[in-house]
Each structure stands twice: as C-alpha cells, then as structure tokens.
Picture 1 (cartoon, one colour):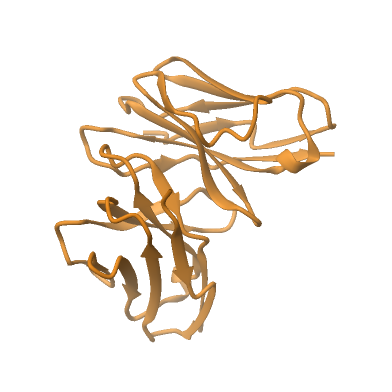
Picture 2 (spheres, chains in turn purple, yellow; picture 1 turned 90 degrees about the vertical axis):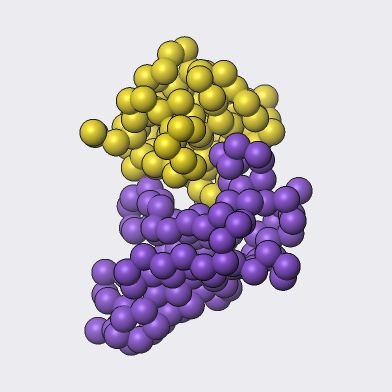
Amino acid sequence: GENVEQHPSTLSVQEGDSAVIKCTYSDSASNYFPWYKQELGKGPQLIIDIRSNVGEKKDQRIAVTLNKTAKHFSLHITETQPEDSAVYFCAASIDNYGQNFVFGPGTRLSVLP
Amino acid sequence: DAGVIQSPRHEVTEMGQEVTLRCKPISGHDYLFWYRQTMMRGLELLIYFNNNVPIDDSGMPEDRFSAKMPNASFSTLKIQPSEPRDSAVYFCASSSGLAGYEQYFGPGTRLTVT
C-alpha cells in the first residue's frame, strides 16, 4: 500500500525566514496531494493542495511543488510568522475518487519571534 | 455553516465499557470519514462513507470497532468493549465530491480508556 514519509519531524525558524517541509510517497498511482495544518486542540485544516497534472501551486506565502518522477512533493512557507507555528501534515490520495488519504507523520513547525 | 460537529469532545471510560462517538457532517457533503490520531501511529483513516454507504473500512482495527451512518446528517463510531490502547483523538471529517477533494475536519473527540 501507499507509504508517505515526511521530513523533518521538527523545524524551528526565525520569524521572517522560510520553511520547507518535504514528503515522499511510494504509490505512483497517487494523484492528489494535500497539505494540512493542525493547531493545538483542533482538527487538521487544508492549507493548499496539488494535483498530479500540476508541478507547482502558490497561494500567497505558501507554495507546493510536485515531482511525480521522483515521487516527492514539498511545502514552502515564506516570510514565516508566529501564527504559522503548528503541525503540518502532507498526504497522498490512493483511490480514483481522491478521498482515501494516507497521511505523513507530521512536522512540528515553530516560528520564533 | 457550523462546520463538522463532534460529540462528546472528551470521553473517559473504563476498560470493557462501550463507547459511542458522534458526528454531524457539513450539510450537503456526501463523504464522511472517521480518523484516529495517536502519537505512535499518526493520523489513520478508519472508515469512510459515500452517500451513507461504507466504501472502505479496511482501516478499522478490529471487530470491536463499528461505524454507522443512518442518514446524511449523522454518523457514529462505536467501540465495544473498549481497551486502553484505544485511547486516542478521533476525528470526523466530511467532503463534497462535487466541490473537490477538501476534507473538513471536526474538532475531535479525545478518548481515554483507563
């Protein structure tokens, strides 16, 4: 079955710096890759996603890149702010409906003021 | 919209007792998901429904776990009998197949089995 790895497990950056989180997946049939942000005591919330027919997507300070050949995708956060501190999860969908996700283990991001 | 609603938010029970977790998805959403989150295993999909029908329950750990969706606005996840290793945060999420793949998560139920 699908296996999603995520690195690093923890990441600390200074406010204003950039943060990069990387994920790899094993199933070449996966075609949808969302990123979720989870704040303490809350459920995960989608922040950006990318489909297999797109190589890069950007939304303000957040961008995601996808390399299908290498089976990896990355989250880039620029100009980080303290409110970006949270746990970030990548995921890959393993069915044709894009609904069955396998999540990575998560990255705890701390933005230091 | 109120978002996905889960109850209770916290549940403490003794080993061997029956536990029922409840979820109300976002109105109009036709997919509903139950996840379990633990430090050791991360976020795991237990089961998901489409139009109230279970599509994939391969993540349900064992027969002690069961899930139902009697109508489009309500679902339950039941554990009977509960064990200490079932302690986790259980999330319900919903999505609309027509609107794309985004899953909206509820606030979760923190279950502690002593």
